[in-house]
Length: 238
Image (tube, rainbow, N blue to C red):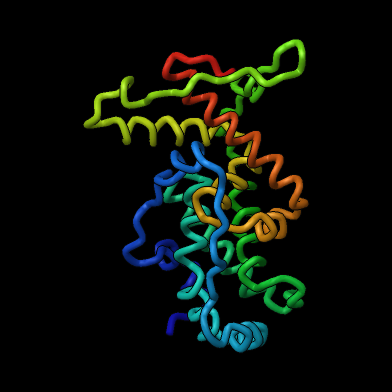
């Protein structure tokens, strides 16, 4: 068993055989309504592990790491898009969980608490780095006619615009670029919903916002992403 101090050394908290996540699946989400997904279980004896963690049990920390690190790594990487930053965030998250376990009161699920630590750490790193190049959404959102009706956006036939051999890769790169232009919290909403399949209620608890705010941010972010793709392929976002 590694000590708690060694578990925060660089490289220790990188899940084994952890491939860098991509935006696979987001393309489909942008072209169809979201579907509900069954909530995943967190494993046996979770509460026992939490109680042991509160006492400083390092074996419990390792067990919790093994249980949650792959999913937390995916979430952080999809928000940050950088392996080194992701490793740093995951190290910080588990060290924080170890130090602050006694503050967990069980009013929310333990997994939600960890998700919140992860997302907050990732968003904080984005804000501090100032590397994200946010753009104004309005230029890529649907337009409205003078009578208030929504203008119809032409259907984008990507197959006619791209060579089939690299069409998927091209779209994935465009989506990643567009995701990086979202406001950090909106990017987190898209990542948690469309890439991780998290229910709106859990996203709200993770981000500390209302379910209504989650729906609004997700809707506008999806419209923006669709608009960016449409504009790239020569169509008006409207």
